[in-house]
Image (cartoon, rainbow, N blue to C red; front, side, top):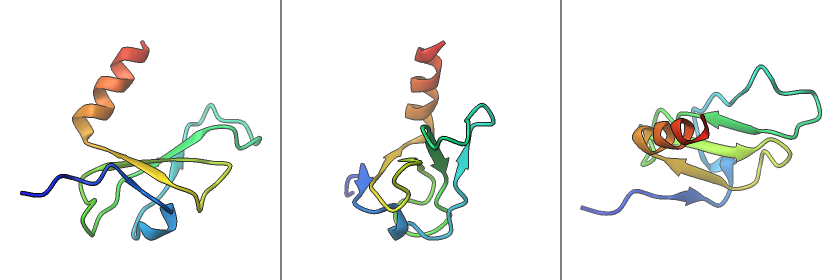
Length: 74
């Protein structure tokens, strides 16, 4: 079994992703966006990218890892 990818060099390589940002975000584009690829090898993972660089890299997290990260912020 091969390891899951941890990142992609350009978030434009992820197809069929609807990127979302927090409703608390201002129009200054200083936040992160998240999306769930629905096809391809990263399907089922959560992608995270910098809103200031939408064509830049994206990090990929398993749903459990992302939930643990969010829980640690509280």
